[in-house]
Image 1 (cartoon, one colour):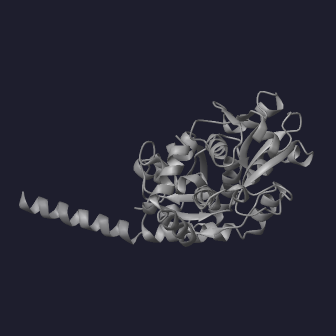
Image 2: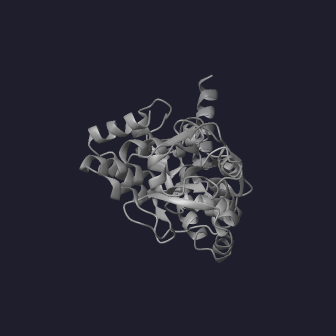
Image 3: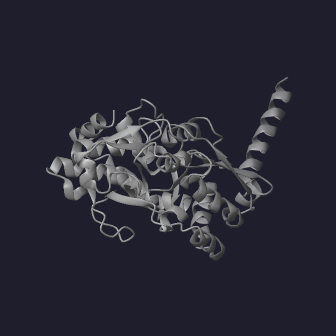
Length: 336
């Protein structure tokens, strides 16, 4: 019996050593790597992720096939909760989530979020986002001043979706009269405007460019405001949100929300992924973003590619967690 136990122990050690000796290329060769996307099919996050997936596998040792799986819900939180707490942690699963999900646990305080962004293995970010509120050309609302005087219907997903949160914050901080209309999927927001069900919505500019290039090209929208501390080149003449701040507290509140957009297209893995596989994912991610074939496809789809690495992401998260608690509480109160 003792001999049998010894043999089993030796066998276990041998198998563990063999697993530990497995190279990154050996692990990924012939394997499917699952890329979970925290949004619906057809939205901006989905388009960015599927474009990346068509090229990323060539740069990962072992050249795995990348299979995109949509896991929408709670503005990306459903996917992040699954990635951190339930998905395999061996490097075979990565996630593409919303920029807001880097800071959402600070504001949500564990109500829906079941992860700490400081304990996530961030891979990298494709580009920042500039959140805008805009209306259709047929709306009676034409300018931000109109939206401050008249009720403006805004298409949104859930109560904690980007559009709903942004609209409610602007109502309090700068005096708009946005009214979120809930229940729309990501790719139904623009349909709601075209059908006249709502006046407009609040959405990332680059998401709109990626998912609705024809509508933008034909001038189908009037831009009201951009959530940033300065105007952006892509939307000349569109006012930046911070210029309407009346107090230092309002400015800091807006800057917390702006931080939610700076890492607009983040990719992540579980913290427990082996170090060599995580490093390979990070390195290959940035190699892909320099790949001429990827860049050609991204350009054709009018995508923004201005990456940041995991160090920049971690720095931003750490900075947000240093924001005074009373400012955070103000945002919590505004986003309930």
